[in-house]
Image 1: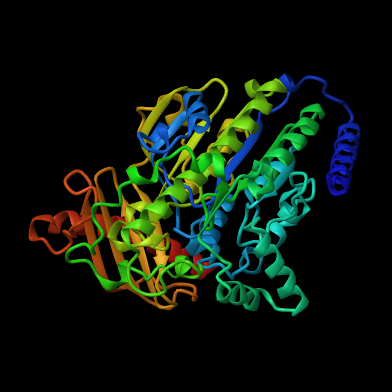
Image 2: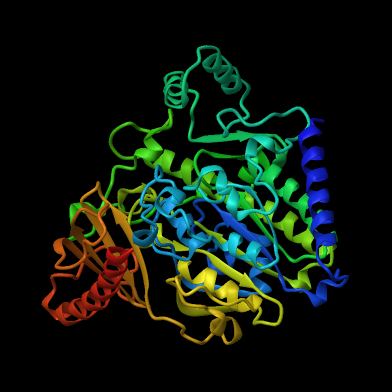
Length: 521
């Protein structure tokens, strides 16, 4: 077994914990006398296809068990349906227009050199902060300033006996490993390597192999997380442990036993695969992310048989990551830390599985923006759902209040602690997401309990203030009570004119306040 990196890291972790424990003038010996720990579980591309969200198809017993010990937010939404902006928003408590991270290339610190992240804030307030796996996509090396114990990359994790880091970070197929070795011999860069794999038919959208969980990244993250938790539990300081799981992000690579949970012949494709009536062209995209894979259609729609295969892969990947969550939670219980630990589980955005003829994320529709958010906190409600609208920017202030820390004034969200105490409480009545189409079009969407208003605005959004006198280039309104699949936009229906103006006014007030802040900073 390749244990050198693991043992070295754990030795360094033990040394850091020992040093920090001896640094203070008065060593604390009881966890109960300290602040609550935080276990921060984030899952890539996970939409709320979970039993605790009422989905009858996908098997997620471990996440459902976590939900039974906490509060499930029935109406939680990401700030932008793509990895980096979404993650940077939850880690900073700021919307994308404040972080100025709207894509996968911009580095958070380049735009916000002095921003204090969520784990950094807890580190500054006496916590040991540790991160493993995929976390702040959009920050170089997952932002060293955030962690009191150095962040560990997936390449640094220990994989199952007989397995190494997955080929291209994704696959364990021996043929793909061999192709990666050839790409390295040819000194191909990242883009050239991906093109080479695709030309060889070795970048499939799915992989089903009878291999151990920890042959893949998520299994390795879970194993490493449990080892780190064991060390943190022996320390005297509270901890903030963030674990980032990759699935169900493409490719849908999961051990065979999770594929075997489902009968593909019984999987139904989405019943509505058309564009919504009266909707603008900006609402859609051509799902290039999926087309990057060698077995995906390069043009045109996905045929029903492959749709079933992809949905099967997505479900298997969800069940795979659910099992990893189960292992981590079992370790938390075994160490006796559950009673003193806040657990937050979230998916960074949703995912289209054929609705509107769309795949992947990258939109302002419900399937891309709605996310799972579960918070289990000692002394608060259990096995409850709250209808309160929630956004990712709400998580930072919520954790501050739960932990007894002052809430930084710069944060744009609202603490949801009132909903954790009494789940029927409506803390806020809207959630806002956004998505750019190129540099000069930005779509902003406001979701209320019943409606979604989306406006597509023209402007140079890389500049400081662009929302004053916005140029409207498209508008949508959907009624989820009457039309949950978004088949028809009501934005130009005279019967809804007053509602459109009310929601537009509310949305524009927020956008202009953001523009005013940006123009001064």
